[in-house]
Length: 374
Image 1 (cartoon, one colour):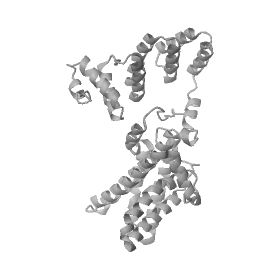
Image 2 (image 1 turned 180 degrees about the vertical axis):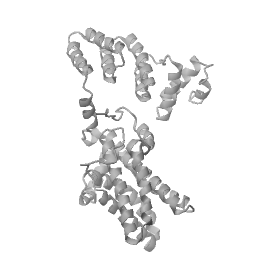
Image 3 (image 1 turned 60 degrees about the horizontal axis):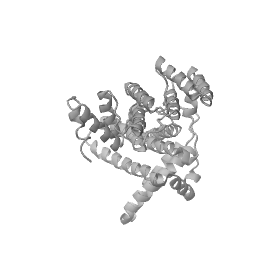
Image 4 (image 1 turned 90 degrees about the horizontal axis):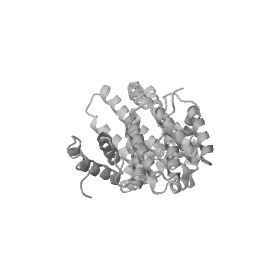
């Protein structure tokens, strides 16, 4: 069975949302986007058949978008495969809800044009709560209940504005895309418009799933992905960790030695490293914490896990504020990664330290902007 890739637990919300921009272009989501885009040719079918086919395409789009939201909320990092069974949700209800919203806004624009902006604002505020309710519960009556809206908003707080803004941008981008490709022949405009719509809808629902995953404790959720990954990944390392946990109660130094030996043998999972660092803190071995930090940062950078490496850098800076990775290539990469995900203070520290320690390195010129005085 392939390994289960789970979401990184300590990633900032801003980093999750930015990373989500690539989500519709990965794995099963990319295949779904391409397939759904080609299916938009169905509107060329005559009369009622074409209309029915178009409705079926949009239902399929929301069906897959719901799967993405639920899978993201469950803590999975990868998009779901196109064919999924047993999922919750009501894609037909979402289609009906969005169609009714469009018709209501059109009616307001026709009979009371002065109230159009208010209608659009109300729709943008309420649709995320109703979409999430229909995705997880599936009951239209529950989704239309004002108490449901208030409960959703109260649980997310100010973060609820994220899907509100995302929904508004979704509509704006679809309208812009429609106008931008209007001059193209239909044989080209249909799949291009379908691809853009599929990407935007999947991204929108993925972001709502990201929000649910990020606030899972506040919502009282127990995502399934970490538990499944733990069951599938049970190895000798789990036995070692259990042994060391028991041993650490009476002899933490011996437990630390065993974990150190395991780390030296071959690449060790993150939990072995984390548990080793817990024991080193307990033993007040700051020197070993810094040395291990250098080793683990290098391993994480080599494997592409820059976000976890940044967390280790922060831990080491608590011991030694001027701490930097010994490899200039890793330091430069981490400075840029910290800037991308909004960790600006850490980005400045790494970039400034890099420029001072390796001023003649080829990457120094590219980091001078990040290292500028704040």
